[in-house]
Length: 252
Ligand code: MG
Image (tube, rainbow, N blue to C red):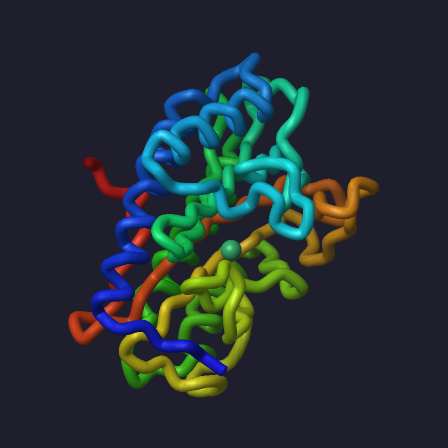
């Protein structure tokens, strides 16, 4: 069942989203060779708590971090730790914030210094796929319109959308109905109505679309070891169209 939110509730989610946006923008400035993912995690937790909010991931099903930090062939759910970023890496940073009982979820993938053209293209295409999907988060559209827009944006560029990992509804819980696949058919799936709020999150491999689990029970890697990227927004269906509640692409 899709739990739709009132305009007042969407404002509360937007407040969580503003904290999350500032957190991601702060983390992006810290990404450089030699920084460990544990240091990014610590900075994120400190910032989120300084805003009177809580990191949504910390303790979620036992997850130990406040962020997921997923370099290179790690697609998502990387546990922050001693890994030191190095020049040429790409790193996905995923953050969740709970503020006054409402959750926001967003992710960016950032290059560490200069990266090779294949990595640049991966980031550009995955980011563009997210925007293409977000544009479809409109009253009267179906979920399949979002899914297919993402899939097309990725596959038209010769990259692989991962099919076994999906986005999700979001609100008082981090994961609500519906699941948001990153592939599908236009006009299919649940109707998007005013007040629906989705976390949409294309996850893309340079190589094939398959993934494998890491030994820690969290990390998800591209099966073939190719580079992966992940971008995510929390987006609400409003009368004015899609409203991105975690606008990390905008300047303050
Ligand atoms: Mg998510």
